[in-house]
Every structure is written in C-alpha cells, then in structure tokens.
Amino acid sequence: MDSSSIVCMADAVIARGAAETPRLDTLSYYNDSEPNWNERPYFTKVEEKRGRAGCHVDVSAEGKQKFEPENDRFAVTLGSGGRSSEQFVACMTSQGNRVVLSGIGGDEVMGGVPTPAPELEDLLSRGHFRMLAHQLKVWALNKRKPWFHLLFEAVRGFVPAALVGVPKYKRPAPWLNMGFVKRNRRALQGYESRLKLFGPLPTFQENVSTLEVLQRQVACSALPTEPAHEKRYPYLDRGLLEFMYAVPREQLVRPGQRRSLMRRALVGIVPDELLNRKRKAYVARAPLVAISAEWTYFTEMTQRMVSSSLGIVEAKKFLEALQKARLGQEVSAVTIMRTLGIESWLQGLRNYKLLSAAASQESGGAAVRHTRWKTQLN
Image 1 (cartoon, rainbow, N blue to C red):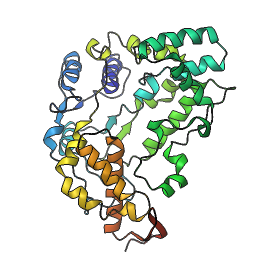
Image 2: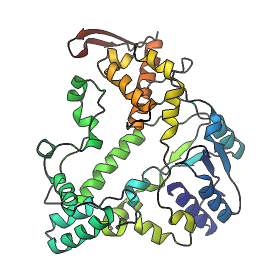
Image 3: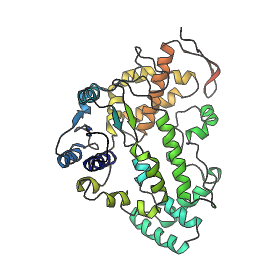
Image 4: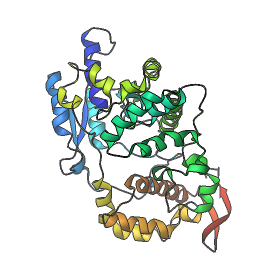
C-alpha cells in the first residue's frame, strides 16, 4: 500500500501541473510461487487506474540466492558492494529514470502497526481513566486478549526494562556471543529508553525514537550505483511528519483498522482493492527454501565463520538455528538473513586482507583477545 499510494498521489499532483517531472514510471516485484507475496492483483489495479503498465520483475526467475561474498567488488561498509538485479538496471536505463521513490517509513508514520499501546500510554499519562477503561474494553475484544494484558503493555513503557524484562521480539538473537551482547546491548535493542510520564505525549516520544531508527536505517544504505540514481523517501518528508505527529493516535489506528486516517484520506485516489487490503505482503518461505537448498554450504560455513572468530556469533548455536529453519520450525528468518549478510561482508574483508583477528578458545565459547583492523589498502 505504501508504494501504491505514492504512485497514485504522484499521478494526482502531476495531473494538476504541480510537479516538475513529466511522468512517473513503476517497477513492480512479484513471486507467484510465494503464497504470502501475491502482489500481481494489486499492482495490476494501480496500472489499470493509471492507464498504462510498468516494468514487472519476477523474483522467482532471478535464481538462487547467493550467500558467498563477491570477491570482485570491494564493500567498504555492510551492503555497499551488492549489485542491482539485471531487470532493475534494464528498467531504469530504458526509461532514463534518475530518481527512485521509496516507501520506507510508511508503516511507522501512517499507523501501519496495529497496536493500541501508544494510545493507551497517552491516556495513562494524561489521567483520562474513563476513556482508558473504554478503549481497553474495545481493544481487548478486537485483539481477543485480556484487558489487563493490554494495560501491562502500556504501563511497561514507563518502567525500566530491568524491572519488567525485555519483550521477546526485542531480545538479541540467541546465537550471539554473550560478551558481544553485553558490550552492545543498547545498540542491539535500538537505543531505546523508557517513556517519561510527564512532558511530551508518549506517542510523540515514541515517534521521535522511531524516526531516529529510520534515520539510522537510511544512513546505512549505500549510495546506489548501476545505474547511478537518487533515492527519495516521501513518508519521511518533514511537512508530512509534522502533520502526522500532531494527529491524535486514535485517528491513525483503530480497532481492526490499520492506517485509518490514510485509508479515509485516499478514497477515490487509491483503488479500493488496496485500501481494503487486510494485510501487507511479506516473504517468509523464500529464505527458508534457500537455506535448505544450500545446506551443504551452510554446514561448511559454520565451521569457519569470521564472525565467530571475532566473538560475535556462536557458530554452534547459529547452526542449530539454521537447522530449525531448514525443518520449518519457528525461527526469525529476518535475523538469520541479517547474520548471513554480516558474515558475507566480513568474509569479503578477509579475502581482501583488510581484516585479521587472533582469537582463542575459552570455556563457554570463542573469545577475542586481540583484533587488528588494517587500514592500508595494499
């Protein structure tokens, strides 16, 4: 819905003559073999409304995912040495496009996360207990959860994590070295701090914290090449952020309806099929299939992990997580893929002889006694 809304709004702005660009082209990814990524019906509706088709990229036809480092490309930072897909390059060059609009921030800014916690936190901080009781009842029925569970989720934001614990989804991956986790706990938990009961509304405090996370995410993205182009983020526009952060939370997310304000505002601009879509697309099966297909490579990789020699990852525990993924058991596929990305990057640095480490074995796992980073490029 994020990208589709950008396209439809851009068309409306261009039609009014309020834009400098003559047109907006679209690039849509799809994978009909992925049950949770059935995007074709939705971007087809957008194309029908626009009256012209865009470029289509069949992700399933791009071949197996590669995990080995690309030795012919130097990646000075994580993610900076990758190549764009051939279909993407062909689409960009054929149309002469120089700017790509990204939907990053749509969920975080427009109320895409269906949780009542921020609204309940606001009511708690302002002492609106009658409205708090009403909203707890409404949300409890919608979420099918006891009301006191929802209340606890709201209260815990004001309490130090040492007293109430860290939610499961915020805990570091179990295969990370404990010493590494201890040294980098704040970074691994997103530099979060507890909410202040007095001062700005809790929703505003959380919005600022989320914006900082998005800023770090964007800052970590390498400048795009092949072809060279700019990347813009409409949902991170300052004017839009100021407006959305001033809107009461109950206007953004309502029981059973994510992005409530956005959906109401875009009626007649975005096709109804997208506005009434119940859930967004996500890819859960493809990474697990890739792990199963490349199992021999992974078993060998865990025996010589650079991240393990540096005291970042416990190779044995990571192999156990890969085995769970291979068997279809519950495991965070996103966290696994990020770990593999870091390992691939470190292997690339080692292949370029830019990284060397003297590691020794201690009881309980590998510990790094000395790590030396080479700064010369010879």
